[in-house]
Image (tube, rainbow, N blue to C red):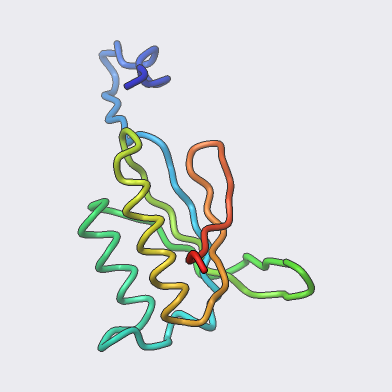
Amino acid sequence: MKQSKWRVFQKSDDYEIVDLGRPAVFLVPIGKLQVKVGKATVEQYLEKFLKKNFEAFTARHSGIRGHWKGQIDDLAEYEVSFLGKEKIPKLLKMLTDLAAKIGEKCFYIKAGQYTALVQPKT
């Protein structure tokens, strides 16, 4: 694994750096957060998955509007951090499974400096 960019700031008597790795950000239409996936809402499903697999996450539910191919959605933004690349496939699989369950064609995701649309294979 590459050395963290934070390493240059680690030698200090004033603070300690805990490297959380790279961020992954994905967007979910706000209108889909209350849709049921089994017994849970999409919001509850995401919360459970992210806490279990990433220990922590940030969710922002306002002020984001996405425009794509003639569609406009108000979006919730979820962000997690991870060291290494091992957790990315698990996150991508969860998003494609969720897309299929709630009738979304794809989800926008950004991991590190790269962006993509992730969608179920047809």
